[in-house]
Length: 304
Image 1 (cartoon, rainbow, N blue to C red):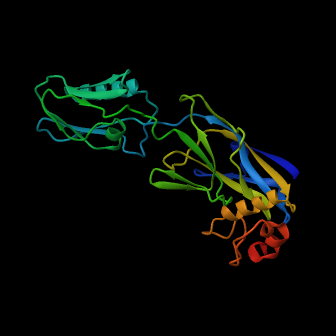
Image 2 (image 1 turned 90 degrees about the vertical axis):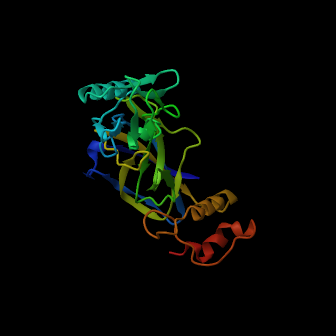
Image 3 (image 1 turned 90 degrees about the horizontal axis):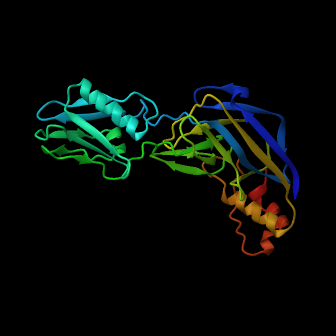
């Protein structure tokens, strides 16, 4: 049974404190979740500008190659957002400036890049970098007259398909595998379907992705927005709405299943923050009779 639904509107410009990594918000008056209540929380909507660069200087943004018996040369791609044709044009201009007879092309039908030596009588080599892997080139030597072709369609936005809305104070037990990193306490995945320069918008649809907290007073929390590579995304401005739906625990079976869901989602690596209380006994629920609220509350699972 719903007791109260509280909508919390967040505006990055109104954060109490902010730094390069996070935004801190204070809730006044605090949201009080009592012992006989639980709260479902979810992100209802989110908006920000898509300013994600797909070529970034903090990743290996160089294209490295050698021609003939010469030493290796690197082209440094200026950080920014590029279409495949934009990137091809940038690299070809760099080849000209470096007096290299190499030419890169992009096939809009196959979505693949190709690289060749224009004289057709000189070998060249592509050395492995992050950019060569994004362009799907095999790092190896190519014989005179041979053309290097991407192994599969090129996705320059491979590292910017999603944003992750994380709140460290909420022990959601949610883990998102991002590259070789982990984004703890991610409460919402926001797909990026808008073009660079347009707005990224998210609107929760039923059934919403919610998580449960109980027996806490929520007075402040911190928001960080992560990319697919677990890097901090710092847009110029963003806004979001969080819904806190407080419900009363009662003696019906559905509420006890909710309690079991809270217990199941408990993160044993921490016993603090906004997560559920840890189990303190070896009590095992064996039947529906054991699911009655009194039985669950009387055993040490829920002692304070």
